[in-house]
Amino acid sequence: MTQADIDATKAPLIDHLIELRSRLIKALIAFLVAFVGCFYFSHHIYNILLGPYVSVVGVENAKLIATHFLEQFFTQLKLSMFGAGFLAFPIIAAQLYKFVAPGLYQHERKAFAPYLFATPIFFFLGALLVYFAVMPFLIKFSVSFQQIDVKGEPTIALLPKVSEYLSLIMTLVFAFGIAFQLPVILTLLG
Image (cartoon, rainbow, N blue to C red; front, side, top):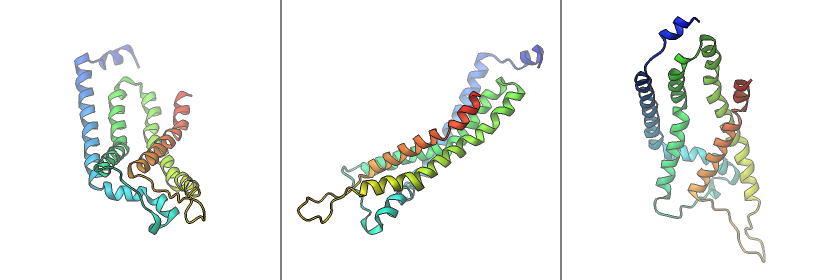
């Protein structure tokens, strides 16, 4: 690439800011559309997230509690935001890439593109590990501390709160998703 090619791609600051605003608006629209969809199906999504709990304790023993009036509503809002971030991430990342790509050399663009595909795949793999391995193990461990019908002992039953269960599984999904980004980060740094 020659100096003339570089000079031809220069744009004034206002053009960059207009481009950035356009990309941010598209990313926000993707997030809002995903949020509305997730909120509409939030009850079903929450029931899917309860899968590890139900599989360990059984349908007849799977009971969660809500301790204040709007707990379920706020839990659905939180779940919808998390789901929207998860679903809209490819579009948000693509908008970010489209904003940054004109400033990269051709070989840098080609090297960066595979990471746009690897990042959500690795995050999803981390989420699957949490759902199918970590949460069932954690729930079995927690359930093992119950004291139900033990003669001479008080009853201690596990009754998770709706919001706390969601917070736990979201935290674990986020943590494992980020941990699964380590190969991407190390490759980029290399």
